Image (cartoon, rainbow, N blue to C red; front, side):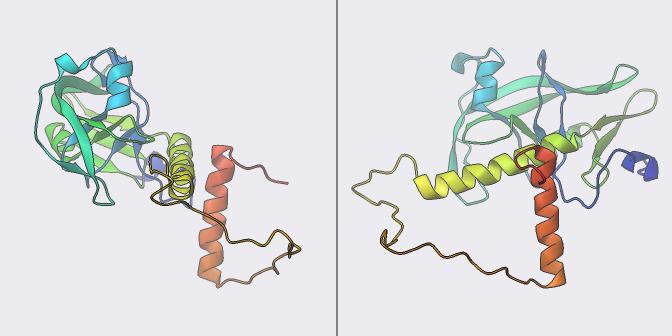
Length: 219
């Protein structure tokens, strides 16, 4: 399997975007599927599981714990065995994967972890935005969607901000977020701040992601 400049033709740089693909899971074309070497299992989000037409009786109960990056245990609803297909017709591959059905807030629909990647004997490259794998005849590939990746990234940032300020699900009697602002004081415009070159480049990249995802417009 070779990755070369041809694979980079549609990739916009600079980027540190995750690899999202649109494979066929079961009989459904599923968008926003993250390919993640850091995930030990293959995950199907519960909202996707329901939208695909499945119900709780079709998954096998399990006591397997799943933890988010924050170390918070997620609610595991069960495990369901489904075929996943990647690639185009002439160079396609299908593997039966055990998806752990997880009920959690996420911008993803599913995650292909190390078990799924190894089942396909695949090699993903987030830099080239493609995952490649052997088929009967040639090397197959499933290309990522960079615009979708950036949209998901921005959506997850917005969710973090809303979740951190509004704190849904917490009794206001327990804790309430409040801005300590004097309404009688005049607002003051903050002076323009200067940043180090590397910080300016990081800010520029974040702004480009927001522009690309359509969440802000250039004036």
